[in-house]
Every structure is written in structure tokens, then in C-alpha cells.
Length: 136
Image (cartoon, rainbow, N blue to C red):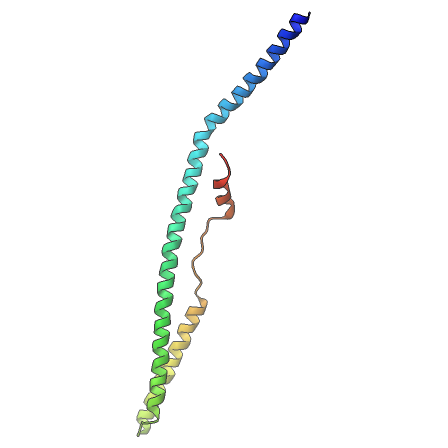
């Protein structure tokens, strides 16, 4: 009777190890697919990051161009304002006032464009990034 209990205990232990082995085999079968999914997600995130960097660079260049254009308009306004004092005729005075007004309108428009433009954002959610970090 003692011998049968020992054999039965060994068989139960063997069956548990066999069940664990089956479980590990199933996990191994799914690993390549999970790795591929993570690699695809990572490639997508990298592509989006590269696109974001390009967009940010373009945004900075555009913003710098607008700042330069804005400074030019401010200089035009100053220059024309100084010229007002040396103008002799009413027609020249009105023409300069018209130039100043146009430059002020252009400046105002540029300031509105600069204040309304936002830098580009990355669309990948933190959950997607977290899923890349989590173990397979």
C-alpha cells in the first residue's frame, strides 16, 4: 500500500510537470507573434517620432520666418513714421500714412498667425508606449 502511494505521488508530480511543460510550450508558440506585434508597434512609433521631428523643424523654420517678417514690418513702420516729419506735401504725407497703416495691418495679421499656430504633437498614446515596455 505504501509503495502504491509513493508511485501515485510521483505520477501526480509528473502530471503537474507535464502540465507546466504544455503551458510553457503554448507560451513559446505565441512569443514570435507577440514580438512581431511589438516590433511593428515600435516601428510605427519611430516613424511617428521622425515625422514629429520633421514637423517640429518645419514649424520652427516657419515661426522664425514670420518673426523676421514681423521685425521687417516694425522697421517699415518706424522708418515711415520718421519720414513723416520730413515730408513737404499733403499727398506724400497721406501716402506715408497709408504705408504705415498697411504695415500695421500686416504686422497685426502676422502676430495673429504666430499666436494661433501651435507646435506639432505626437499622436502615440502613453498606453501604446507602455505596451512596448511591458514584457512579452
